[in-house]
Length: 184
Ligand SMILES: [Zn+2]
Ligand SMILES: [Zn+2]
Image (cartoon, rainbow, N blue to C red; front, top):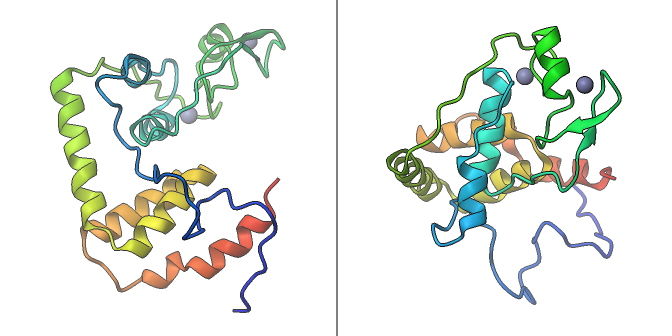
């Protein structure tokens, strides 16, 4: 419970003052931002349902970072991975009939392209669940997103939607701060 003395980096935006702008809630692609919309609309390919959910989640939260150059495939060791968060190239994933991201899932999804109506519906849902969160939930949620802990983030959404304060200690902020110190 001792407050941590944080070093120079204040990357997660926990500082109250001196913040230039608040962009912590950049959830939906601005429809005037063609690049963001394109990312959002480009379906992930060759991955299982679980990984698809994770990637979609990232996209919705504007946490999706496309690759700037091809990555090395873990199987064929060629620079053929063109999709962010994938570890296998398309060919290797197809040959092995596994998910190109987790290499385990075999329920490969053929994702449908989202329509503008779908996008609108999703962004409305986001607004709704973020509005339902307490300030603390939101902070914890965003921190989990930063760390790529989508499962943890989803739990918070569920808790917020159910107004469930019961098991709330699961999301204790102090605990999170400690974990964060160890990050590379
Ligand atoms: Zn490969
Ligand atoms: Zn997967």
